[in-house]
Length: 309
Image 1 (cartoon, rainbow, N blue to C red):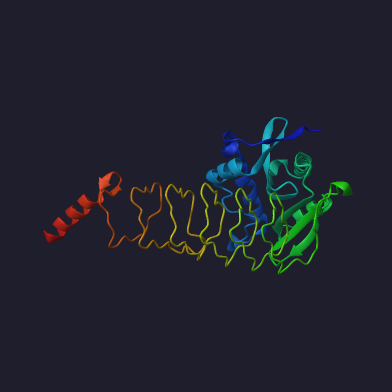
Image 2 (cartoon, rainbow, N blue to C red; image 1 turned 45 degrees about the vertical axis):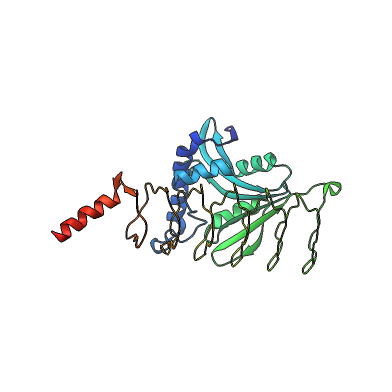
């Protein structure tokens, strides 16, 4: 039997892992999607799956393991662990030429052993990928939710009763918590709709795979935070201090709705390797602004001289 191991991926692995991921998910798309559906199912072709920059981000910020068979990288498995107890398999991919030999199953088993404190694992897959449904059932996962396009699976890991410290399936709505120490608490599949957090210390909190639509964040200290892999379509950011903020590998979403900047101070900012097609700048201070190291003021002056002829 071939020797299979998993190791934490490094930036040096980003190129080969991107190539394998693209090859794997493109094959899945060809198998399960019609031409009209291409790029419409994010479980079959996840956002940024063909981007080396997305892979670098996941290597840096997530638990990204390369799957190795006899010293050859043949795939990857990416997991998110919230606190100690809850794990999510974000992506798993094995080079198509190595599929059907149990390597994916063995990789998942190794990840479960790596995070031995996790008591509940979860995974989402496309409703189209029938082979995935059988695969995860065989690994002990149970379907807990489904929509027309997506199946949601979970796996409960049994732990000794004496080690449990859990409040489960309780009705706790409309309770007020005042001056309570809830540090290092873990929340999983809880309904916090309509909840209010005020004058509280949420420093070093970790929020992942949560629905925060229609929420309000006001008077919040987000200093030195990481905000990544978000859907901010149709949102508003008002009265924000953006000093030192770095926007990278960002697009305008599927609808390609343009961004609108109004009354913003962007002095000293830099746009590099960006698509600025059809961008408009009106009634703005452009002193010292350059395009390809040429002063825009000089370009406009030359333009108006030509117009006046």
